[in-house]
Image (tube, rainbow over all chains, first blue to last red; front, top):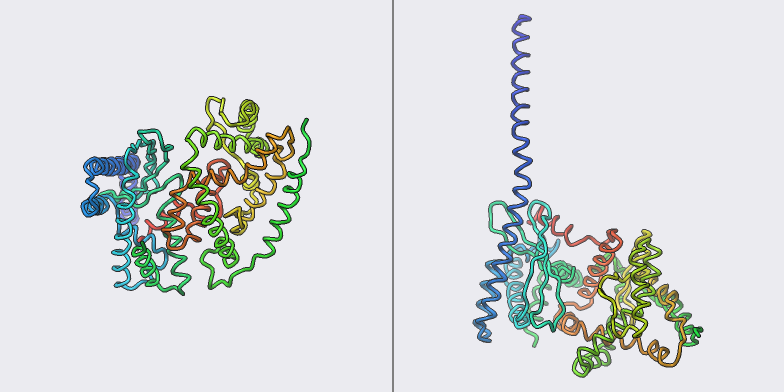
Length: 220
Length: 258
């Protein structure tokens, strides 16, 4: 290879390198501007899901006939629409989710769903008269937003309650609620730690947790 | 004239010994049976929890239920306000140790102003301006490790650090040394049981939910205690505790949700 052709190759490499560097430089501001844009989109999606959910709860409360079947139907629809129940189930089982077999997973998700619906139906009256006001929304990583706010009792009889909603905000799927935090206490973390205790007390048997949940659900 | 109360001295001298005896009585659990690494004395802790639940069922819950039904809201507010007022000297002391002089000053002013009503009526503009501080939080600010989880008979959930804090707070609180007439003496004697009933009444539904609707009330109580304590320490001291925050757990989960 002649000296001239070697120089030619070097020059071509240099040109390619400069070109790619130039492209990177051009893309950098674009990348930097999409970061806040993504965060802003996450916050908007999370706020929308909370606003929409609260609005539905208020509608259900206004039209609640006190009929348990109708209430159960409404709550089930609400939870399926706004809550990521499969993710809630996986998180609440902790490390034992991986150890569970397919049938146990299906049973657990179904039992947990029934327990959550029952709990909300039983305590639905307590939401009456409460108004939620959003205080702020913080992005937590690239997949979650914490929407913090306060429930105020319109009658003034109950003290204000600070509530945080952890909302999963995937880029290609609708935002859904993963956790509710009341006065800095995460309901899902609490449930997870309780579930882990039950499984460990039963020599790591995942089915023991499902049995315990069913037994508790059937108790008066 | 202020003087040392014999009753207060007895209480002060007994509290640390009771705590030491209790710690000595704790028996550890084999690793395989541990349900939480922070709780090596789970066996004896569960016994203490069962004792506390019995106490609650037979004494505290009926008393709190009666209190809710009989005491008018204004009376309940006065009692809550008085209980908060008696904790202000400890907040002043601990805020000073932590270098939070604004909170120390505020709590001292609130204590002096509200002493006109013995704390029964809050005369300050913003009662929530003072952030309650205890010696457990002061120890956290000095990087003292949290220690193990301890369920203490009558007192309830603690860590060894927070229990030490409670003992120090009871010894250093100037309210324990005051004797300014029979009325105040009676109030001081009545304060711990009244505070217990009032707190139980304020948390009546939430407490009963844990007690009657949990899969395992013991582990639920432990989890609630750790989260609440971590939030208090993080908010005021700004130091993370040795339990992972909820955010950390959710972020790890979302990294690998399978």
